[in-house]
Length: 266
Ligand code: ADP
Ligand code: MG
Image (cartoon, rainbow, N blue to C red; front, top):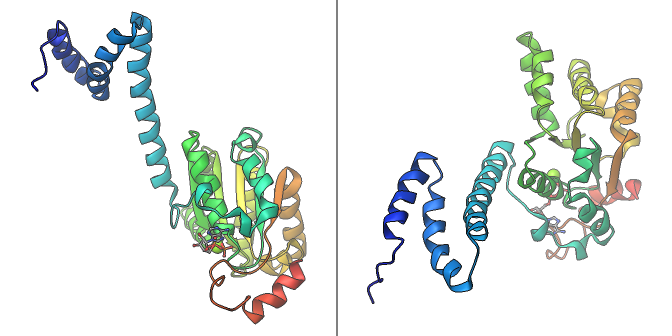
């Protein structure tokens, strides 16, 4: 069946040209696709224009989100839909509340604590992906990578500039606090990152250690206490529990060394 020429053919050609000039090529496709439907269902001119523009805006939003997700530096992109809350039932309500992103507007933080394999990185990433989809700029890195980045900036005399630049990101994720202890200089840089975001922009931190063990990570009771104070002053702290998801079907409940750690967390 050959498509019958319609009265709008010339107009559609012109729309193609104009949409290209506007760098909005999706308008061409939406205008053509929606025209017959609009005629058949008796849309007003305004309804039709709104529907066409909405397609362009939605597509731009989606490609913006894709770019922000790519720029965030997630190890692997994970979403809340991929997360099995039956394995972590106590986290369901608090995480779903966070998914709306209201905490970002309030510059609140999120701390995910729990033994290895309980989904801390997955949930931090998924909240980051949700934030990117909501239009926020996001950066993800491990605590060790953050320290390397800040040390580089410090050595180039650009620490203050870097901290200011980072404030433009609505969300910074610091994964794996506590996997490696920090040297004194590194702990101080980390403290500056936390301070510079305090009440200005959100942080998500994950750690396999309870707060009571953070002094060991930062090498200093006072630095750790001051840092924890700023982090948790406006924060949701979510404790993940139980056996490693990685080991769930392996016939091992959890690794013995982790069991001891987990018992100290619970
Ligand atoms: P952690 O950071 O706490 O060590 P991860 O988030 O890296 O754990 O989880 C380990 C692996 O198991 C990842 O591939 C993650 O996607 C998966 N995983 C963990 N918990 C769940 C869950 N409840 N539902 C689905 N996948 C999960
Ligand atoms: Mg992890």
